[in-house]
Image (cartoon, rainbow, N blue to C red; front, side, top):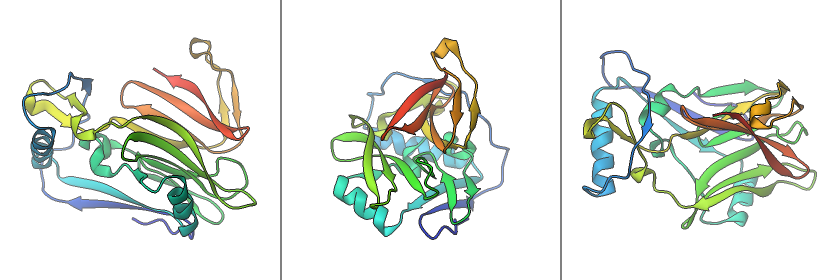
Length: 235
């Protein structure tokens, strides 16, 4: 499946590999770090176990416009988006890859990148989660009358997805490796207040982004006054 946007594209690949039982929806529980062997070896073994029991494999590819690529290169020449193989396989299987029809382009959501109109100028922007050689990063490329520009939305220590693992049903056989955090797009509309999260009622006038951790919590990122502000959505 391929977006027809003249500006940005997200390619989604689904490959039938076997016929078997229906996919299950796992309950992912955070587990302590694994030290018995190298991260690379246990990561590969985990993926092989998953592939043996899965009849559809899904991956995605993000293609930005030349202008957005230039802005990201200027912001940080070492920045790279997280790829589909960096996420928990079960998360990729159940994630809702989705496009949103706009007048001149498609908005789109993937676990590591969301294309939408975050500043209300009817031109696509993008938020991408990725990394450079030292840090995990979340970056927005925003449109403006003077062209696109990069805004650093978040920054933290670099995390290796091959060392991030969750227990599915106990023991080594139940482990999956990869990130459990993901992005989705939320369209304009009203969001009810929630005093438990210190969140006021929000009258969303533009697209925004939900950043979630599977079965744990989520927060909304809204572009306002030249920056992104966040509110807790669930925990």
